[in-house]
Length: 94
Image (cartoon, rainbow, N blue to C red):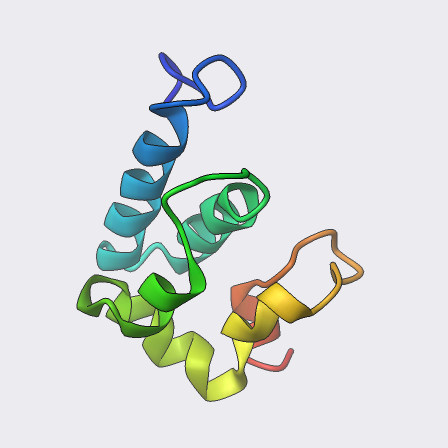
């Protein structure tokens, strides 16, 4: 990601960041995965979309936590006080 940041590579940068978030989710690094997703949802034309987050089995580690708390409703919600659209803390209701 450092070699191809989104700011310098608008084509492949979001794909690399999405893959990184995916790996973080499966490695149980949920805070880091949510941090990447917060960046990715602001990128127009990115690979990330609500349908994938809600139905693709690869996002199960995040969805198990987030859907129980409605955290994937971030697409319709404003940014929270911390400046994030969603977070593990928000998903847990803290």
